[in-house]
Length: 253
Image (cartoon, rainbow, N blue to C red; front, side, top):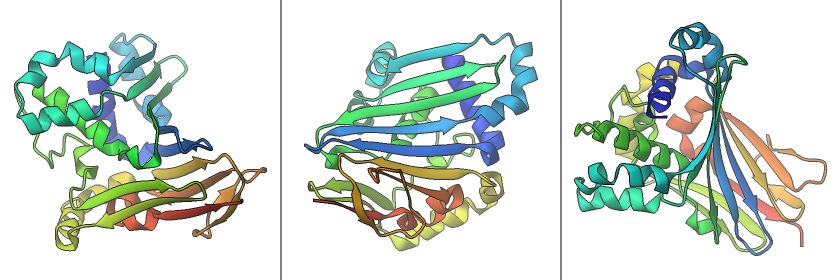
């Protein structure tokens, strides 16, 4: 399993141009629900399939919780500062479903968790970055925040804050740039990576208990029953202009 994670992160670093990400939110009438972050790396598998087969990698279809993973690494985590340990504790309710099949050239993963209130939802890239940090720490070596070998760290922008809210009628996804200067500095620092993003996309798929009356994005697409909206962005936009992904969705009464 650890070898698989290392492989995934390495491939993403080399072939981020082929990565497509999806953020799915399912909201119930009482405001509870589920959020999932999906990554389709099947194109990566097609690019590196022969190498993976040569290495003798077997097909994987596994679901596990971060709590189980953290329990296995409790010795490493216990050596971290209290602030870092708190980050892992915060993610214990997350689970991951991973599929890798060299024969069918399929590679996908889904990171997901349930919530009682929309305000409990977290930035999913922060969760992936926390796992990546753990992989770096397992040998007693912490990865630097902007380590180019850690693709998720490049996306963990501490100058921004992502919040979700649902009051029963209006759902909002709001990114605020807390420090414009710091954000611009971080965006400038990864300009060289922009070419790697290529045709990568970041899709928002939001599912509601009632039909949507309106959404403040002209590019939003609706399901036939108008209970689901879909908005697609270039992945580079997610990184350099996160406020562009802000949404306000108003449901019918």
